[in-house]
Image (cartoon, rainbow, N blue to C red; front, side, top):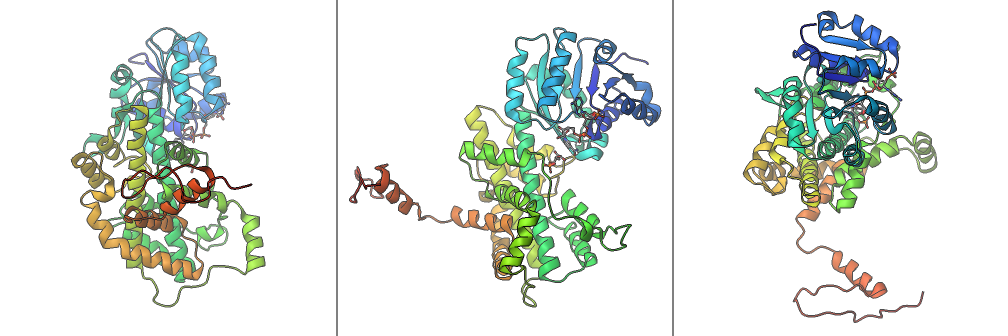
Length: 473
Ligand SMILES: NC(=O)C1=CN([C@@H]2O[C@H](COP(=O)(O)OP(=O)(O)OC[C@H]3O[C@@H](n4cnc5c(N)ncnc54)[C@H](OP(=O)(O)O)[C@@H]3O)[C@@H](O)[C@H]2O)C=CC1
Ligand SMILES: O=C(CO)[C@H](O)[C@H](O)COP(=O)(O)O
């Protein structure tokens, strides 16, 4: 080997193996370790010429010994206790200046804790969010790093080298200290859930409401991928709609159980949004939809008791242009909520989250990459602190597509086709343009039963009442 490695990686699974090859391909020698040694053997056998820049090791001690200090060791293992176990096992082997980088989908609160714990330890700790799936990890992911400027100065060059490039710009950047990188990755995944759910809702409308076959559905997604909705998720939706089941010979989608899995990042986004008291109803609806999808038996029982839904839409109720416009509106509303959550978190945690940069590093490499993110980056740059729906060109796009979103939600609701995320987006939008809402009723109720007080519109003093403020029971 030409140069001894300064980098190491633990966990040669889907992401870790691909990331190690990507790092080696960019000229950084790297030592690798996997819990199951046979995986390391087959990884090395399949590495081809890149094997020359890889050092396979069979114990953690061997791994550490193979890396020249100061070491940077990437963990690509399941989030949660496994990360703590790995850190605990590595700690006695490390020395001052060594750095552990958790690149999995950690909960940002765990990252904050691990950074704090590292202060009394020989090693340093940072958490980075990586998006792009296996292909992204291998050929260029989007990387949301959390840590100090000194840590970024140390590993940022490598992270930028291996990251995706958007018109030559690296899709890797420092988000802020501690858990900031994992927080941004968490919100990325929340948006990913919502994007996927809204696409699935348009799929249901085409399949159940409009009677499209899989070819019609695939052709629609393919056409949308040439317009404002152009994105990785629309692209793969077209591909999965076209895929044929090798067993039945019919559409693959028709053979897949309608129960969505989830590993937690979407749920965490919703939990953190509630803690911040920020409204992200499209993402919340997407998480709820995954929860409901898993209730396969209950949904079957519901159909037996109440009669099955959905019904086909009346002929001509919707067309693919209206559906596309509804999805454009829903997508903008969802991203407006996601970016709002990020800016509220930045204020709450005193993080200087680089909002335009976040949109920029999501333009390539990550699962939610899309054509729209370039305009979002510009909008966040030109009108900092402004909600995306109030920023050009998105105000105009929402105005253009709002009627279609309403038409779709009304038609779907009438036919019993559940569109929770699209409907949540519309409801949020309606709330955001209602100057006189209904919360005066809530304030009056709160004051009635709990003497919680309220503000008068005319600004005059209003201690309580005039209702009964101490009801029995
Ligand atoms: N898959 C994806 O699209 C993405 C995943 N991520 C995140 O990346 C991380 C890794 O995911 P992924 O590569 O998909 O997972 P895989 O299941 O493919 O790989 C997991 C790796 O962790 C190792 N591992 C599992 N349990 C232990 C343990 N108890 N002790 C030591 N090593 C262990 C496995 O080793 P062994 O071979 O011995 O089982 C394997 O190398 C996760 O945090 C995930 O959320 C992030 C972005 C995208
Ligand atoms: O981080 C990712 C993509 O960005 C992973 O693929 C993650 O597993 C997706 O989340 P879930 O498994 O909950 O659908």
